[in-house]
Image: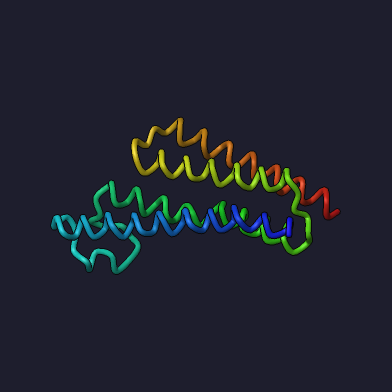
Length: 138
């Protein structure tokens, strides 16, 4: 049963991604209603004509399919190999917390150094998870 615990932060990260997707859909709809863009502007992902505040959310949504994918893989490998322990769980929850803070900063006041700090800490945690898993497997 302990092994299943590593899936909780994984699903929390998925939830964050869906939350940002909902936010993106909302801001795009708002931009369309305000007449700032036409629906046809969303036909490609070039971002032409989208206001900066819409592009910002779109960029963040795209970002959630970059490094977090490594987090998903690590969590799944931890799960499949039975390498879940309290430290891995804490690191996984720490990663999700940092990514959530990163999203909140990026999608609100967007202070670059605060956002970078959240990102950097999440990366250190992810490296720690990969390192610990590699040690345990090899």
